[in-house]
Image 1 (cartoon, one colour):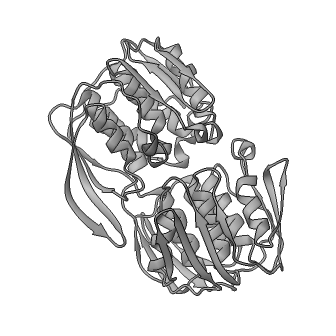
Image 2 (cartoon, helix red, strand yellow):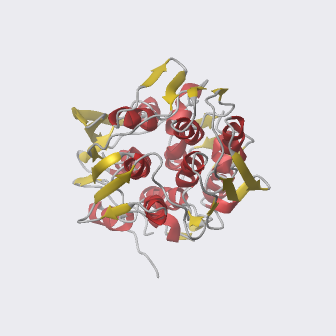
Length: 428
């Protein structure tokens, strides 16, 4: 990365990863044909698509971002001939655990070295309470699921805020007898609930809970995937640091459980305006207009942490460029993502001359001057992209290594970034 640069123009970011996963999975379980527009063609989402194909679901891809899923119904999946490889996709693996718990056949889920280090017991434990027979490998993948068990609905309180665990339980609840209810102390993203309703499943939700009755039936429905706010976050911070005039990010998903990054940046002083608010299917979308603005360090409010959990790598870069100190706590979930994002971000920022101290569940960052240096992303796509943003305010070149996994969530990042002003050079 060459230092400096200004952002000009407007972009449209790729489709939302969370919604793309769910669209293919629910389309496979539905009766009828589901058409998906705006599907994110990243390695993570393609892992879900290939898993459904391996279980007998016919899926067409007629054009860019277009997927046609020929649903087989709740009981129509077939035993895969080999282990289902989820690559780097934690969402695909945990949601599939809930799906496979209700099948008549045995199955095994595997992943790449990064995914194979991530905890799976948080999903396996409640599924066992429903009657599922699941074996993890010292709490991690490979995960083996025995088919042919009868599932019962449960009333379960999440110990850690996790939309993936909540979704795994609700998906298993589609196959279970009786009511499945999940309670959560902190709000997590609600794409599963919204999409299940769109597919005809009566889902009841209120303050701190979501519930459904099983067994359930899904009916095919068109799905339009909005732009991913987690991808937009890199350009929100970049434009705040280096926009020339107004920089626009079009058609961004504005689900209320996902906009913590906008609220945090505004608290730091960012100039972000929301325009053309509308609905795209069951999801709210809008255009985001950003102007450069000086940032101030803040104590990030606890209630916003789960609403921005995937965006913290680039928020830490914003904090490094802010005046004063930024503190986040209650973010221990960041330690079990594709990497220990607290430790890896602290190491990377320190290598660039910033005082950053990770703790068991948070980070303290003193804003300062970003210097040149070499940063190891540890194969974490969001960390690699966050340090690409950091280069906009650095005094010298930043070298970012181990970046291949950017393709897992945002394969077009480098091209988009160069097109609006980043001095980014990819070395094969």
